[in-house]
Length: 147
Image 1 (cartoon, rainbow, N blue to C red):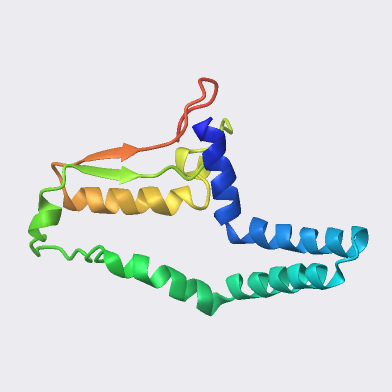
Image 2 (cartoon, helix red, strand yellow):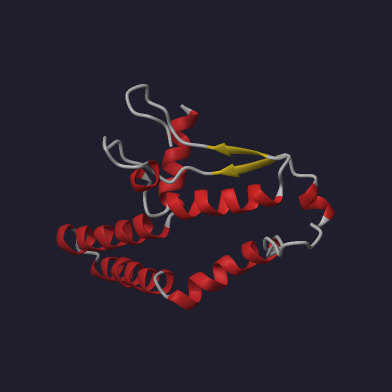
């Protein structure tokens, strides 16, 4: 039950489904009822919210507090000492980004366009942390290899 509740709540918290639902409600209200003003309000609200949420400047401002919460990963230069918090890291975790199961291709050619830069960055960090281990996530369905 909680799975479906989570799906329902998450659906309505995303901007695009909310805007499309408002637009659909506006059209249905205009066509099937006599409450034209309510229908136009739904249509205007859906269009306005879609315009606001698809604007680059709005999205940048919405993400800025999350990006400012954590310091960025420092650039590594050979011979420099690592920050103490980073030097104590035992694991480097790379989130899976998709892969294909095409026989005859090398492992890097099987990775998706988002997975390849992720694994390259993970290996770059791992080289600076020789005692750390690399963990790569990804689904394993039993038929195809995991990421």
